[in-house]
Length: 133
Image 1 (spheres, rainbow, N blue to C red):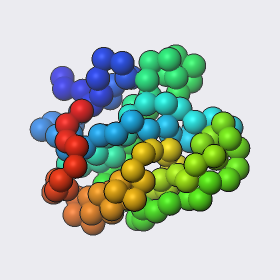
Image 2: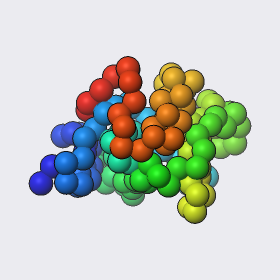
Image 3: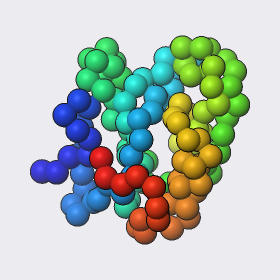
Image 4: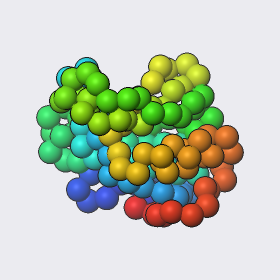
């Protein structure tokens, strides 16, 4: 079975014929006092976070949402616990029914634009930028 991720990440099963169209190193804010290191993947169907093996071994969780479930993408200004990414502005992804997720990630404005486009047009790969894993 095909996986989303790579050798240094806790992988997740890919859905049949699912393709990764973009990925970037990121930290996912897992709790108010912890950000988990890993990689954020955009597939043609969903957004997936895979923690690296060290964080996975200490409780870091994988996470995914279908693109159709994303209601808003934005930026949360820095502030809050420094161990939960609070020293930097963070990517905020809101769901129609599951609250929000925060990520510390480079090129924040570009990532927001890419994910907004993907959420508006699920199933169509966004143009430009880094592709693959």
